[in-house]
Amino acid sequence: MPGATSRCAGCNRERGIATSRILVAGIGNIFLGDDGFGPEVIRQLPPRLASERVQLVDYGIRGLHLAYDLLDECDALVLVDAIPSEISPGTVHVFEADHDSLTSTSGLDAHAMDPAAVFATLDALGGTPPHTVVIGCEVGSVEEGIGLSDAVTAAVPHAVRAVQDVVAELLTCCAVREG
Image 1 (spheres, rainbow, N blue to C red):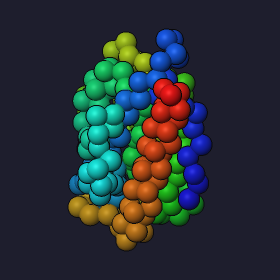
Image 2: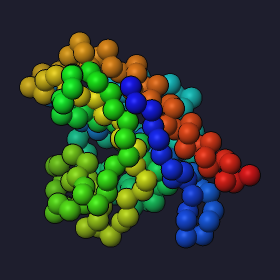
Image 3: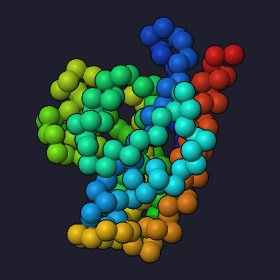
């Protein structure tokens, strides 16, 4: 599993002040098999990860809700989602989102949940996307049905650890800048 290599996102670069508000968002449709990966990871995260500085939210298929929450200007977004399979179902990837390509689609679709639609909606609402780290798991099946495939179920603990590592890195980076 690749590690997260991210620049510090917790700094308000305009003012040079570290604020470090991090939103961890699980997205996906639990009624479409492996697409429910994001919500399952959020469900498995230890409650102690949530704090005044870190918010854990299962957005499910509420893309418009996520876009509106991003208007509150969090400093970093950790997006947990199912991604198309390129290597093997259950493979977990950690990478920074490319907002330039993601906001090029038209926004304001209240029922769309893919990250591109969320960021396009945020853009249409006048918001700016925060630094975003994606923790994605390659899917096996997104056919109708509740429950993850065996390969994606086995990847959930790896994704939980990846979320914890990314959040710790973001918080550490911010603490160094604050101190």
